[in-house]
Length: 200
Image 1 (tube, rainbow, N blue to C red):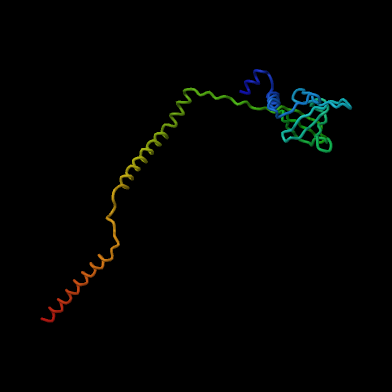
Image 2: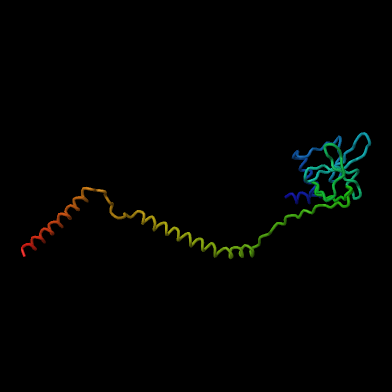
């Protein structure tokens, strides 16, 4: 949607983001001290009337240059104490520019960061059919496994409801009486065997 808005209003992505920041109150625009020129703001000082273009780097550092950001101009970094030449290397601004400077802090190149636009993918019937055909075997297998699980659940519930073996009671009296009867029976047989041996 942002891309359509940008194309409709013929503005760069950086300009659009700048306007959105101002609308949301994330950036303050001080019209009495700062003028907006392109992607950078130009600060005027009352004492010497030198216009300084300022920009903010992605890490929050504020950089300035006399006039506009152009190759060959001195880029300075604003610190708490003073302004010092920018260190050698590439510095990316929040406006989407990459400013490269040499060891003395002189701008050697300025490039726009190219942001690739998201391309909307169109789904046609062939794609949808291919996707459905690729997923169909997996969906069939999932349905088969689901049916098998439901069958096993039913069998388990039937098994769970069946009574198990008869309950075992811990009745010592019954046990001792049965054991006593067995012992008495054995003794009676032994006595009978002895009588039979002594009669012979």
